[in-house]
Image 1 (tube, helix red, strand yellow):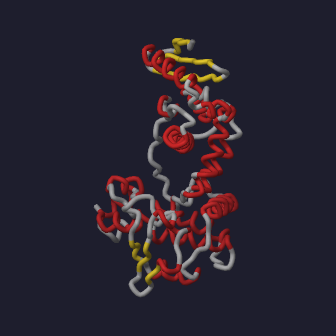
Image 2 (cartoon, rainbow, N blue to C red; image 1 turned 90 degrees about the vertical axis):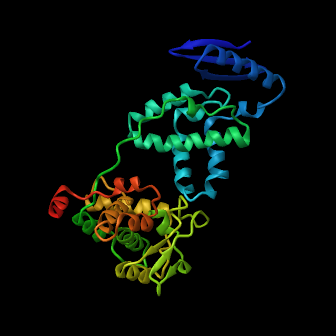
Image 3 (cartoon, rainbow, N blue to C red; image 1 turned 30 degrees about the vertical axis):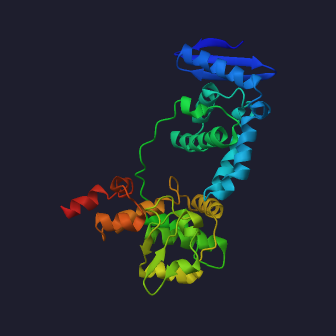
Length: 323
């Protein structure tokens, strides 16, 4: 017979039957009792027996092996899964995984990283659990849905300066024959076009129309665009075209290479508080001086014009000059 215990404002239900242990947290005692009844019936019917022998870490590894390689963010997901497998939550059996384990993982992570970092990991782990529920039938519910997610941090307003750009480029260089140099050229290309890191890494020779001066971002099948709006034709300036000429219309880079080498260059250049994605931020702010809001949204791949407010950050001094 299962047991029910009051935990703060919620109720924790536990079942131990035929060597299988399961527990969840529910909002009401009635929901907890209903879960116990359904779970005991499932165990007696021989359902979900394979889940009892797996840990959450093993589930994450299964996802990284079978699902992540099919996604453009696969390299990042595999990296995060390796990190999660070194945490306490990885050893929790799936039969016992509940919102309480998620909450403890969240609180421990928040002691060393920001809310934004925890939210990104949270989204990945929640996706893993959703797949386990809907496709693999290894979980009966997603415990991340029941726990409280950290608040979304305020949008970044950090704008990279020309001095910081110069220092980073001094370290990276612009030699297309080296991986480091191509990362430098990719950074300059992002500053010029506002394209995302993944979009730049996905560029291939047949994507570029030099005569018509645009580059076609094809979409998910090439690992480029996240949304329909992201699948677009990007107009190219003279500088952008010259960068593509230098690399032969193909940067030949992976996301992990850009991430690692750009971080290393920042350290050598003594530049703190920026990311490669801030090049997009810088580009949109500069392009807003030349394009109207609809033209800008089309070029950078934003359907929601409110998104532009996160990236368009003129200084008060620049606005004052317009007045």
